[in-house]
Length: 428
Image (cartoon, rainbow, N blue to C red; front, side):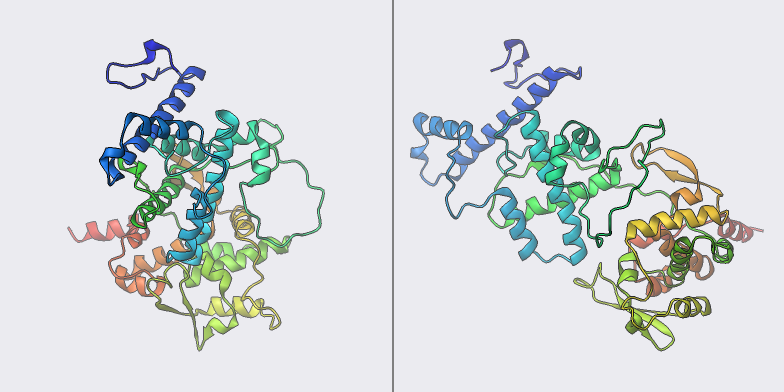
């Protein structure tokens, strides 16, 4: 039931523009009404004998929609059951499965959030998926902090981060404070950027399309829902001179930072993805080069990448050589690696200002380079500095593992001021 003033001439619910409880309730009712009409249309369109579509039959469909039977048929799969079928039967790389699991946990949390906010009986299903619900999922993904602060119990059942690191004895750590000096609750979700949310929704759409192709549903809510465009800024990387400055910085006062700095420098000399770096062992060293098959593409395009080792790279391997250790370097977690890289940059005095794209506002912002340093900057440094000298993307792609004509590679081809001056010189 809704107030008659909210029922429009086009047989639809008029939604007020002003944010508030009434708007949220009406959005939920419109979403549920859309799900009901979709169900009725599906019943009519899929019925082999149209004579069974009577008033009484449709009343029964509506009744079951509002009060579904509790006992499920043994062969009936839930929405999340179908996701598991997708992950086990669909050809996905290990890394893509891991990334999809992030989406699955988000959807579990969204379902619990909807139960706490609106209806205790809410369940995600192909039937309830509508463009309106997708919009709510998108808003939820953009800001899970609000859900965490209102319903922290949800995050006890499905944590924001799946911990894979080996547990260490608990240590008393000082509380983390925000910019205003307030204590940040443990486990508070980070704000996601627009690119990250668009990537999650793109994965979700791929699953729904697969479900349609495999007969699990006929409903495609993405047909009338537009996923935001993924936008990348200009790749930021350090010059060879800055890399040398980082390597020669005296970090002996903090061995942990020094170790991760050295790993980063080695990373800059081979240019692989961090997931491939962490998997490397001494067996990857063949002759005077390091060889590996990229985890990201090994399912679709298993090409062996061979990168000759420079003198600096060999010296760093020897510095940390430990025959009893399986990994090439004393790796920690990727998060720990990224934190220590930033600290190493700061201690080495690498603080030049760079312009980056804020992924939440899509506005340009200026930051010191140590604030944006990360593991992936090593790959950009490798590609960017070689490309400045070689200027042939296909030749550089042989070392970086990008296939010929790769659109992804174009993001690394930052034409800097030196290259621009060289081109302008051709006009003289």
